Image (tube, rainbow, N blue to C red; front, top):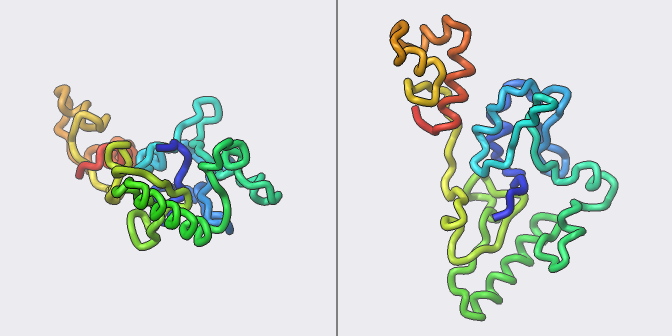
Length: 199
């Protein structure tokens, strides 16, 4: 599966961003305003596809912008322009879904009975994806999520939480309020629960 940002209709990164740096454009794409991003990395933990990364040089999150600058100039994304097989296509979502559904039916007629679209259903997973995929036999072997994993704002004293690690090493007993009192509870706990999906 491509590591391109899927520009989800219900984007976990956008929902998790505490500064408003992540926003949706008029084209439906999800972008990060580098001037507003504080580098908290909540968006990295909230993305079910693992496409958001951290730029150590700038101290901000980064991801595919769907070539926002090119789209605004009528050029379309570079990946779609460069694809020699036209496997990557760009256009209006409804038209692309209709074209892809025809391709699925053609493939099923050729014997690929499990051919399906991943992310095209706007009533399904994450409200639909603005970058969807034709796959067979199913998206699960590719490691793609098939159910939403919501960010949780709860904390669990586990291996991953820095506050919990300190308490298990013999210091004061761990608790959310004690962690918050050290000035680390909110960010450490949110990051912990987003990253692990545990509560």
